[in-house]
Image 1: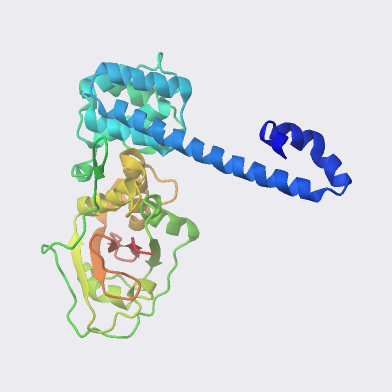
Image 2 (image 1 turned 180 degrees about the vertical axis):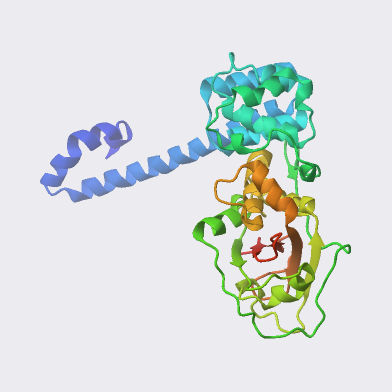
Length: 370
């Protein structure tokens, strides 16, 4: 089939059916084999172009100055490249890390010139906000919440950084590498480890988490593409005082404490909301081992969603309602040597939230090991 190398498409559409009718299936098999080889070669070429394009985008994004910024925006606006390396959320994160806020405000947020870059603007606004930029000091940033698309998912978030978001962690990127990590380990402050041996009896409570609540609680972990996660919600018949929660947690009917045993390691600490939010934000924004997460803007969104589910905010609650529930809840951070956790540094944690009325206890368990 020498001629097949010249024009496979012509042979497919002009001879395939005819050869099949003649019983020449060997011809069709050879034709299919050649097509499969060409498809594989073309697919690899597309992947190589994608890698090369991502590198060019990265170089432009990491090169400070208005000239590189204009060239990058023109490329994104006119060509709309695909692939992870050109995703607006990723590019926005690089820009926020390496460019002057003045240049970003004056150039990126000029909507009349870059008509197709609203997703980039939406992400960049929150990237800058979380980094402590005073948006009121830059008119284009100050006006963005007024002109942004109201349907955009990030529009739900507060347009001012909350105090508990002030210590967010961000990755550090260069042309050929990056460094990031989720804050792990329990602090010495606030430790309330229950004494051992603990009871081996399980508490007579039932998980009542609905599908929607479960999805809300695990949102940050799933966004970060960690190895596994699970969530539970318990409603005791009587209020549970905060000081009783550390001893209650290892007795709850949860898979994350299966195999723990009465003397197995179970460490728990009362944590401020800021520490819990920081952990969830890092989980979603920077992702698990081998991943890159969803970056800061969407990491902020999914951290808030997990906070909403854990604190018991009603479905459809505003950010203000979620914040109120979160501030009134009591937060716990725990680690355990049960079968479910793998106990590698920075890759396992549990979070529990006790509602203000002490009648609802929500739990999230996460591990970055399959």
